[in-house]
Image (cartoon, rainbow, N blue to C red; front, side, top):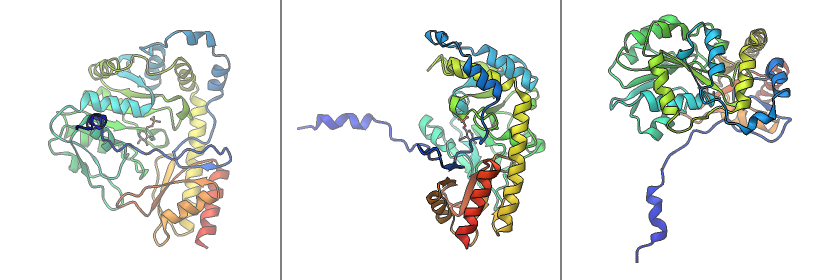
Length: 355
Ligand code: PMP
């Protein structure tokens, strides 16, 4: 007799998901494992939340998110129809993979990079090839000259923290005029160069950003993409083919309030950069190889010490940092920049461990 009960199993999707940084219920931990911002959102965001009219929740949110697109367009000095918004940049990138990577040719991305990219490729059955970054994690632009079905590169890269300049991005774009190039700028506000302005020059460029890092708003899940209006309209069509309302009404208002507070945004980002420099120096003094960072985290080569053991030791002290059991970086640690107190405490405990 056929075992009918089990037949449905062959129709289930077999997929290995992305694993995000561990969350904890304990409010007392020092959480430096998910590149969240240690500072609260702008006071303007807090005020907006306090005065939010709960009666609005009866209604669906705006499916076009028109006001948020308007303030983002003004912030970047671009046209409103060059802006797309979604439920975190993870969703924006996932939709971009669906919308733009439909070739039989493989898409290209670095071997050491955001580990969600291969997961989306597997979900949407997109062929891909990874290009080896150098020993010091530099991306070689000529690796991206070959024929391909699209390119995605984070700038700055994660988890290495390394940012590239305008010449690098233009080099990639000049050699990839027949496919879509996505630059994932999740960490760009802690670096020197954003390529949003290049969307005016290259009609195949899509730049993705997030409110999760530099705007202290990981909890509301808002991300954006910038590109020429034709690309943005394809993204809209894909979004509206699975969910018309990806950003809720509260998130929309808070994201708008955040964009309107440029001073606070610049102040907190500056603070994080200063703490980043202090932490880098302190860990170098302890003998670690710390890569120059253009992000809100640092990437540490543990050398003669065991990275996994350090991560586990810190956890016993209620300090969470990120360890990747991935070839080439399995003796490295990624440490998010917290407050001065949090990072100093982390360095102190690392020093205790090595002694
Ligand atoms: N891109 C990169 C490179 C990231 O590290 C992250 C954060 N995990 C994201 C995109 C997604 O961030 P979010 O969905 O919070 O906008």
